[in-house]
Image 1: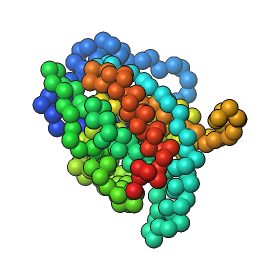
Image 2: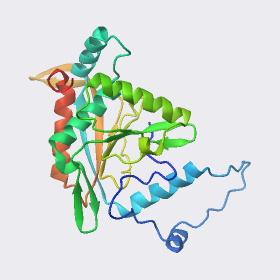
Image 3: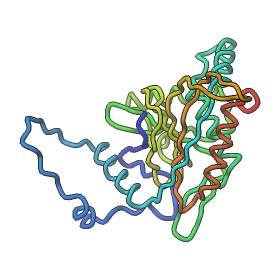
Length: 265
């Protein structure tokens, strides 16, 4: 999936101060209209969603100092857990992405200093973990929110997320379903992307970018072996989250995914 939750009018969590827009004059000076080369082409008017994507991506990169932290996570135990869970499931079962959303939510609950947002003069620490999950749709990107994701049973979370993704692609989400969120997850693994750095969706302070699981050689107890590994990169707003705290979050996420039977329900 692409790496940012954008929807026209979806300006994120309610806060004491809205995310500051780039002044129109400054934006015009910084990004002059490009001259179109003399090559056969067609012109398509930008949709409202695409204009909002362009505006918010520009804002995020200009105003939010990103710090990126990357970790490799073994998936073998998670894949075995999923197979066993789905063999016993009476309904549709769970996906790896469902497990990753739950793992991020649990990690944020364990490391609450990353479940935050920055405002001038104040740091907001949220007491509930609401995870925005990036979904690609025909009209653009949107990230429906799973509220209280850390407290929901895995099967219930999976069912809710399936319904939200279907609504997102049908264009029937309500604003309450995609506004807010305390952190985001973007998974491009199903597209074969090995690793990427996602752009934070203000006013959130972090987003987790998930790459594809692939078989790699590893050394364990001095012996080589093949393991299924994915590369995960966290993007953090350095105004609100120190690198050490971001590292703690990734450590917690890695531990949960690599030991799912102990953490996931």
